[in-house]
Image 1 (tube, rainbow, N blue to C red):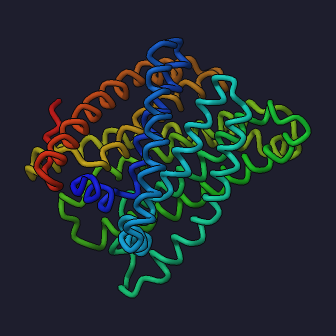
Image 2: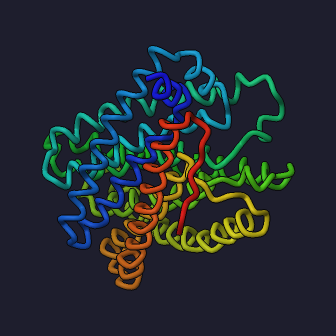
Length: 350
């Protein structure tokens, strides 16, 4: 029991990326018609969400100081936004199953947490940080704030058709959160780029969350495609052309980022020999892979771009394969940690 408690105390704030990764792969499989496998990933997504909610409540009650320390740490605090994104990805998958009431509840929960964390985390982890310059502590997890914002837009746009008289408000929410996400990406991108250019970056620090830089662009594409598909509303009509054009540009940039991130992985693991072991942040890499696939499918269908849809449909199987590899590694790592105590890593075998 003590070993389980140790794992809970050290639980990373970004572990809801497991929910995000499972949910987006499930959505992608549903879009391409692989229903049985999609349901299996949906079950994993839902079970992981419940389990992680329980574990985080346990951590808050029993290890409040550890959680408070994470809120003050610029390298870990932005990981809490994975709860917002995970809630909305699960909500989008729930909505695709026709359970709109549950999806509306999840959206309401995510919006409240998104607003609260959107002010608390920058204050506690950045403005309240005594160390200067804070830019030296920036990393890929900062892009998760963008993902959280765009996930609100995705679910709001998804539920707009089922909202009845309230659909105008969901239209406003979708466009608002999409716009906020775009500006947050620009800000996060500049800060993280300055971190890379101005300070020596140890290969160990170039970890999987840097893939979120691509995933944030990809979910911006999905949110944009969903907004373009929305029924007529003043806020949507005023921005539809802008959002549609910007989504194509963002998809192109996400595509350009993939070879860059792959090259960084080669540089990290093969040139500098950083061991490829299981770490919870690997789920922050799987989510962008799945989101890029779904972005291509949605954008291709919304803007009548069959080549983009074809790329997304094929890329989905890259995400599925990567998910399975990381899931097996996570299971082995958990077993070893419970048997031998925390700190034992597990090599990720390709």
